[in-house]
Image 1 (cartoon, rainbow, N blue to C red):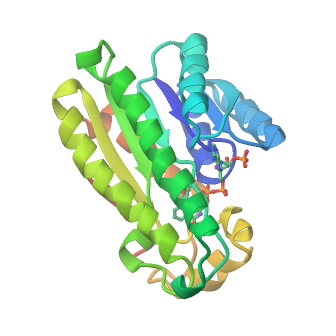
Image 2 (cartoon, rainbow, N blue to C red; image 1 turned 135 degrees about the horizontal axis):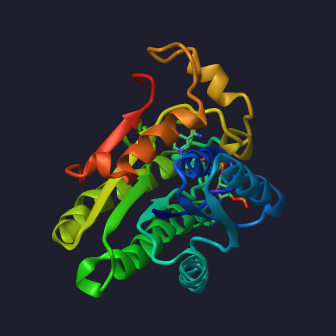
Image 3 (cartoon, helix red, strand yellow; image 1 turned 180 degrees about the vertical axis):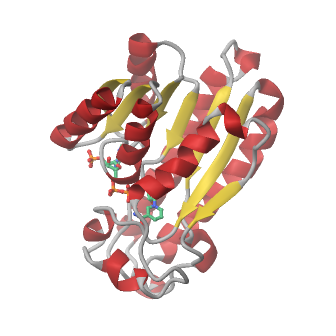
Length: 246
Ligand code: NAP
């Protein structure tokens, strides 16, 4: 199996890469700026028993998306698993106070970027277009159902858009050998909370969840690996919650 993970260098994407490596899979690790983190993840995948390559590129830029698929396929052959994982948040804000610039950045990376990745996957993986088939996993968020009031309704809405895409694309590709599913993580211990201005957010709010704690990136990665694998061969069009009951 050859898996391409956008934003695979840190956080949830890196955890998926490491578990894929432990299965002996080839992993193309996309990142946008932090080459050193990408290098560490590539080394960890190799140490776990897989093949890996770091590929720099912005998942929301059309030419970069095409180039990252080309580079990945040149290294390890056809991609049979795609994790549409790159995503960003912005500092907590009410909708009334959101700038156009902030909204456009969120929508560009989290929606347009996700669609560019999904389009490339549809073009290259579907049997109708000569591909080998495979599995797409869209990294959504439990925010799509909770709405994230007072924090980032714009971010929550991008994930709602992704959930709709999962349903529609799954139906488009079901007969072409490609399964499409999503995951809605809850509060997961990664750097994303620091990028939104509150490094301790997952710990602070994790205690308020039914399980009373935040989740780890590997706990999300386990679900992604299952959806990517043949063990989920009759599963498509669904989005699984990995949120400790939140
Ligand atoms: P993270 O720790 O902030 O890592 C983000 C990763 O995405 C990094 O590898 C980063 O690369 C990459 N990235 C960012 N913008 C990119 C772009 N334009 N093109 C390519 N790569 C890009 O994030 P995370 O917490 O693991 O989140 C991963 C996904 O899970 C996101 O879609 C997020 O919305 C979702 N999620 C996270 C949580 C949570 O609590 N952590 C909860 C629900 C959903 P660099 O290292 O080069 O910057």
